[in-house]
Every structure is written in structure tokens, then in C-alpha cells.
Amino acid sequence: MKFHQISIGDDFIFNGKNYKKLNNVMAQDLDNQKQVFMKRSEDIAVGEVAVSPSNTKNNPYENILNRALLDFQGACLKQFKSYRDGVSMDMAEAEINSIREEIFQHYRDKS
Image (cartoon, rainbow, N blue to C red; front, side, top):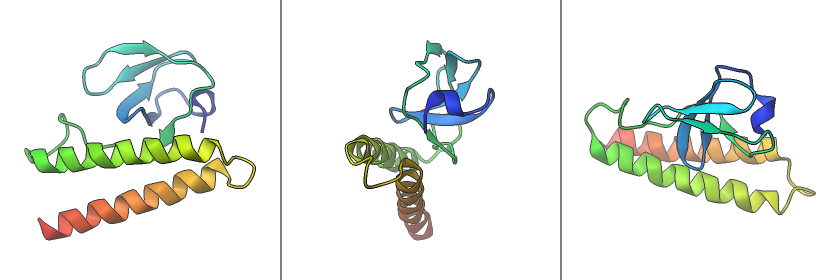
């Protein structure tokens, strides 16, 4: 999904970090509250916002795992860009989000 396709106020993930869309060209990093300029055409992930230091329950391992999974997700989305003719980006994002949640739930069940 592209930055311009989400509504103002929506949360999204970009380069493994959580953001909130402030207007058509600005977003706010939810971890450090800094505002950043966003190109309309930037690829982003939407849906569940990642667990960050500000919203974990004092479990650093959960945050480390989630960051690793977000890096994996970002790498997958970049790879899927090269296969746009054969795979819908929405389908790719949904599949990656599903896999991410399965892995994260498995980790939560074990802890």
C-alpha cells in the first residue's frame, strides 16, 4: 500500500518503525514523536501496529522479536515489489502479516 492511500490519523509501519499519518506529506514516529516528511508513493504496511518500547509490557525479548519480524516483513515487501505482475501487493501484505502474527502468537504462547 502507498502512503497516500491511507487516511490522516491512521497508524502504519514504514522501514520497521511505527508511524501515524498527520497530513498528506507528514507522519509522526510513534516511538520518539519526531515528525518526518513522507513521499506519497512510499510503500508502507498497514494493520496491526508493531509492539514498540512505549507499548511493551516490560518484556525486552518481545520487542526484540517483534523488531526482527518487522525487518523480515519489510524485506519481504521489498522483494514482492519486483514481482508486481504476478502477485498483488495487498495479497502479499496480508500473507506476510498473517505469518508474522502466527510467529508472534507462537512466541507469546511459549512465554
